Image 1 (cartoon, rainbow, N blue to C red):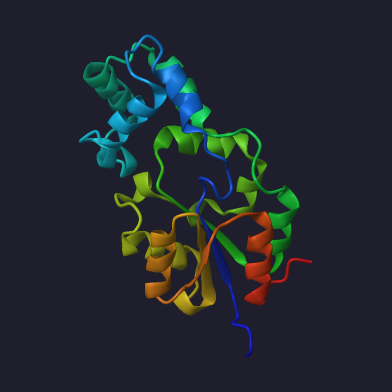
Image 2: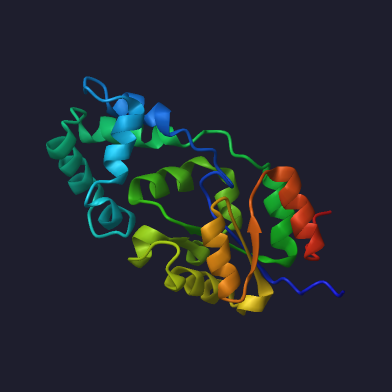
Length: 208
């Protein structure tokens, strides 16, 4: 069978490009609170304004104020920002040469459910972002929608100037990969660097 012609490679970020350690951030955020890190994270994820935060309907300072009032977080905004970013491991999962090779023959994009605090930190802290054009960084908070909303996938395809059948989407969450497939894209359920290399190669993506 002839391999498809892949023009665009679209990556999720958390747990695909950057390791995530929620407990590390929650320990700092929850200093002085009667909640364990797991309990604090559960409360944040279940917060009625969580989706607003992820989809850009609440500013970073208002999110900090909201959690201060709702959960009793005692950190200043600057302290809160530093703690919030502790969830992101400083060492990326993949080496820069991977993106350098991929970018030579493919259009690269990011598609992530995220927030403005993490975006600002990631874009300044990780070198691999330079291989992803600014217009091809599709963040939920900038588009008013979060995965698995098809609007985000369509935005990524538009940014890459690619048809669905010319794109592959990579995510660690199977349901988000399945959405990409239903929209006509190729999908890779991320399991680790080695399997990613094998699956990209199977789609005809040159990694050498």
